[in-house]
Image (cartoon, rainbow, N blue to C red):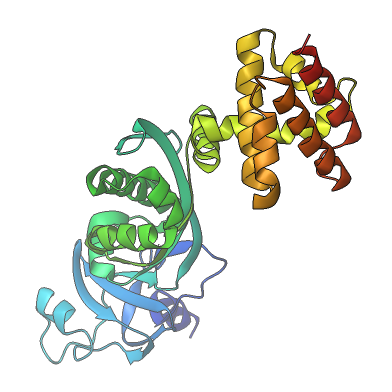
Amino acid sequence: MALMDFIRKQFIDVIHWTEEGDGILAMRYPLQDMEIQYGAQLTVRDSQIAVFVNEGQVADIFGPGLYKLTTRTLPVLTYLKNWDKLFESPFKSEVYFFSTRLQLDHKWGTSNPITIRDKDFGMVRMRAFGIYSYRLSDPKKFYGEISGTREQYTVDDLDGQLRNLVISSMTDLFGESGVPFIDMAANQDELGRALKGRLDTVFDRYGLVLDSLVVQNVSLPEELQKVLDTRIGMNMIGDLGRYTQYQVASSIPLAAQNEGGIAGIGAGLGAGLGIGQTMSTAMGAAMQASAPAAVGAPLAAAAVTPQSADEVMATLEKLHALVGKGIVSQAEFDAKKAELLGKLV
């Protein structure tokens, strides 16, 4: 009796795989020198596929379910081994289990900047990163292209290869699309879909399905990003004339708090008659653009150098009226008054 028990232990009559932990894509069932009992039970759980391999050649493939292993359920293996219909002896065959679960939250990113030709900035170096998910769909392809006869093949073993495939395809996509960097950064969802479409066939070659690919960020190296920020700021400000007007208008409240009032702006910006005239013209234009139509004329007149005593007096009267309305401070009026009267001397 003990001898019969020993003999029975040399035969496998139940074949199944309980996945312990995450990250295993393929696992060879540990048969060692033991044989599979004819009529043995094969259990394939949800999110698994079992494959029988004979001398390196994929034979029968089983999806989720419970199977009794006979010549009827192993037609390809029966043919390869030339079994007749009455075969009822133990047999040897390699059995591999493959996990078809969705492999989530795998990260990809450019370890070094990618150089592309950009319509707006010329040659630029850019970075990108994101996440992707995939699952094993064709164990025959995966066995032939990737895992082979290894006892175990994990997600970590495959991660580097897939990440390089993503980056390589992304580089080609960026180079061929001709889409400016600004548009890429503003349309990351569309960029992710385009990149996924390019990678679908690549993943299929290995028996995988790319479930999703997300571009989370597209950016330039720090030194180029500073240049881009400067350009964006200039575009927001407009041309140089408008920029000068903006700076002068912004300086007025600060100058009013300092000794000399508005007259101090010229000294702060620089010395010389030319600079003072440029500042005065820009200030007049800025104040005219921001003030109501009724008070625009006096401000414009104040920016023009008077030619006679009558014009000076008229200008001072208009400025005094602006003081009463709170548009011009008393300090600013006094400074302008001193300036205009000085020109009459």
